[in-house]
Length: 444
Image (cartoon, rainbow, N blue to C red; front, side, top):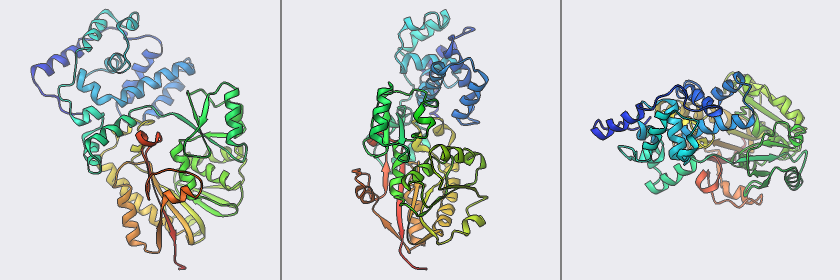
């Protein structure tokens, strides 16, 4: 996960100073909860968001603001974990990591720690100002594991990698997608701003709004009536690559929780038939009530056992458009899921690629002659992106590649992201996304 520290005297001195921080309680209130749940997260046995959700259910005394502080602290430490451990010691405890993050990354002054840390800890915090990592490797500088640095360096230089990492290590903004069945972007934008929720139009997606802050929206009247969903702008752009039309038969092959499905359904104005396939019944469970709230009657969720399921085969050659947003490493979403860089591995990527190739080949069988196929990931890795698409194109000459940028431009979206869509957080302020668009050209 992080670079080996040299066993020299300077390194031992730094580690010794990290161990010197003791006390029965580092901080009180939400920061005490942050230190507690961080210990659970750092086992990396489960996704960080799942650990936090369970912790919040078990500690209902935490209000919205306190939960925000806990989550922000945990995610902030996960983003800078390698640098923090290289600075204060590989064996630093969760509470030491929290103190170091507050002091060095958040810029807390010594006065802010008074009453929150013990006298011993206050002395240790004062010494933090002079600490630096024993080895400032590229992995430490970018807070990425060495294997990921190596993969990314294959397609970019060091300056580009540092810029990408800076984008990945920033918190993501909160984007909303307007449901055009219920409202328009201008109308919702005005209403949100009038209600005190500061929003602006997203730069690329015609259906996107970006909030200045991250308020609780679950009880907002416009959320309850289905006027909007939370969805990253990059994810919204995949819907425009599919470009569904009214009355068509569309398949969202790996629908997950259904965020993209709902977007496609709204673009179809609730006409035609929209199938949402996924192997997880749990993920699909909430799609029907979400579709009803959104005013969509054309959504048909279906749990499948695998990509060769009989339900899939029944649609062979019938779909006008198929979206294949395959399961992937998720490394393009590190702004939202920073634990993924510590939980994924080269072996897990190999396993993903095998699945992705099989899923794409199966999904392609559903496309009718003249129909469209969109392959997408939220990965940054060529193995999951170009390599999978290139192999598919060689094996399926009946599928002709379309220019993703041109598909978007025809819909009024000016975005210079390549023939194959490549979105990067430091360039586009979206999650990292990749997409390739094909059209089936034969009559077989």
